[in-house]
Length: 171
Image (cartoon, rainbow, N blue to C red; front, side, top):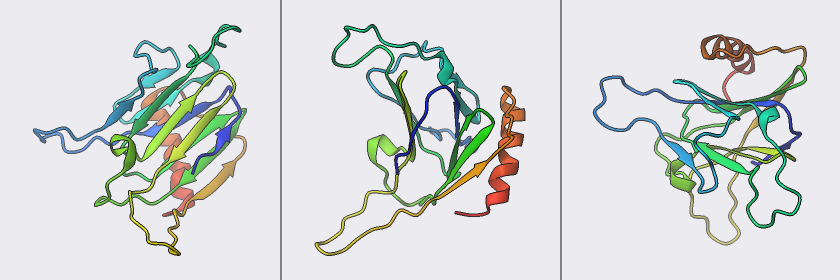
């Protein structure tokens, strides 16, 4: 699903670590062509990606086509959650992950698009072929918590977010 959220907050995307003894790539970070590595909105930790949407500056007024304020990333995360904090309200999404599934957009299970005007916090399901008159459902749960403060450091942010993820149970 693709909720569109008000600007100015902080999205949180869990980043899987994988086996530290692996000799192969264990994590997938996807960047769209208009995403800049030096973009100040992003803080890439070892286990958590934090995005400070308040750092997104508006695009020049006359700019057309892809604008300077646009950016999009994706990750392959098996943790089944993502979150957004704005003015003390935490929006937490829970969704299932299929470890055998093949996911779109290079294997992304979570994608975040942001511009100065809004951001999208999207979870994706595995690619599936359906026949005419069949349907597929991607279940997810949305939770809201008020009076929330999430520290900026990765370890403290994960600890705080983890308490809310635990309160919601399995998706």
